[in-house]
Length: 289
Image (tube, rainbow, N blue to C red):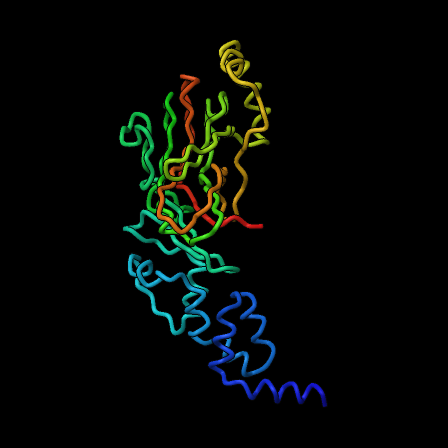
């Protein structure tokens, strides 16, 4: 009897009122509430709710896509942007939103980065890989000066959000010299000087084997390089769900002001040759807690 009364009380609320209330929750809460009753189900699926969960500039972002697609509701659009990469800006960037919060994520393709000497075929070449979301990736032949820099404006991102920047990469089986010296990684916002830390471009399972090979072929040269720095607990690449590797360059807070974020990985101290690195881009996504 009590359950029937509660259900009758819910029916008194206009659907529009329920939709407005749900629009102040989260995408997850809206989906859960649809199980409460038929009224809540209809209200939770309404455009009033999902319009609020979408970024305020979603129409402008979608208009920059190379591909035109149809959607019957704002919920369908939201789920599409959660589950699929939307290529924008001539295919140089990828956009999606976080399913739990609706916050924005971007991937800057390798073509959207500043990679020193990337236009010189002696040092880098551009290739198409079937596993990449972009038409081209940057493949390192051999350089002694490794510098990769990406920039993005905080105005493009969700406000009042903590973000992480991640270099998306692969390391080929024929790689060499990438972990002879640690790379310096950093994230800077506006005019503030960001902190710099170190990273090792290596796979843990390959590290021991390559150390043996380097000692065999290069001997004292490798020991001399490594004597210039102190081996520490630098960051190393980790596996992603999409089959690529990523290494966190740093984190930053996207506030209300529009500032430029500079994200970089640099190794210029060793003056030794390195090769076998494949760069897909830099991802900027909300940090998970």
